[in-house]
Image 1: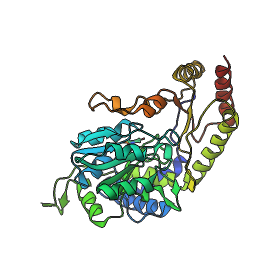
Image 2: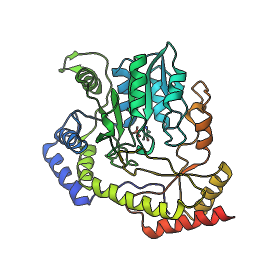
Image 3: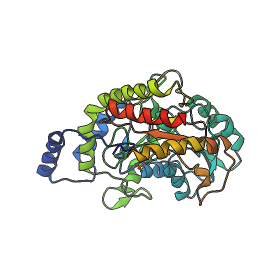
Length: 359
Ligand SMILES: *Cc1c(COP(=O)(O)O)cnc(C)c1O
């Protein structure tokens, strides 16, 4: 069986070393030494000043919306994982969908500007597949209309854009370190912001709003993560560069088979050092896309329709016109990409795809 992804696992002894120390300390959660060590290591690795490790990427988004006190309408992308939209609705705001750029699959700045009303307070955009949004254009719109910007950077770990981490753009960027992501801590997420005040608010909110044991700054939630999850991150992090290199090699192997065909790939903007977090491929139409998916599944290969359907069709949001997204959603597949995927497995997948395209 070839799934779309498999979590990277470090050598068990390397995880065990952290676990032994955790047992000795008998300290499992509540801002423990592994959490602190992981936060420092991530800041160093990503070359960013501030980062808070939290229990998942969805809570990271909800905390970001809460900390920026967003209300009313938030312009967002219909082409993302459901958590980008559900977080907005969960925080009592209304998602308004801008369409996407058919080249990068990211939110289209022109469409953002068209959807702004007097109730708009923010833009929440996803760096889909780790490909940078048009951060310059988005910043310009945000300045012009006094909007906050949150990037759902769940796919963006390790991508460098214009010489700095893609996580350093916007008011806040959120990460997911879920087991299916490029860098993982089993479950987990992080929040990145340059703004000291927002960082402080987020730190309190992550810990029930506590100000010492008997006082409170304000409302909070349990956004903390554990020593055991942090230990997985610490054990995984030394392998990150190799993981990215391996994915680059695999992506190029896919390219060499598939790019000559009638298939499209999202475009990566210039001045990007890409993280190769996914391998999406776009077919001519939905029928062909589904035919390929069925054929691969017959051979126990499981690509994923990522993302499908358009988030603007969720049962709890107001429908918007997003024709580009609605179309691309129906004909995009992410092909298997993970550390232990072999060259011959890639060749098999590509042969099956090419054969299916011919008939
Ligand atoms: C994975 C993911 C999330 C959610 O992260 P969790 O850690 O699973 O809560 C949010 N947005 C995007 C784009 C994702 O891919």
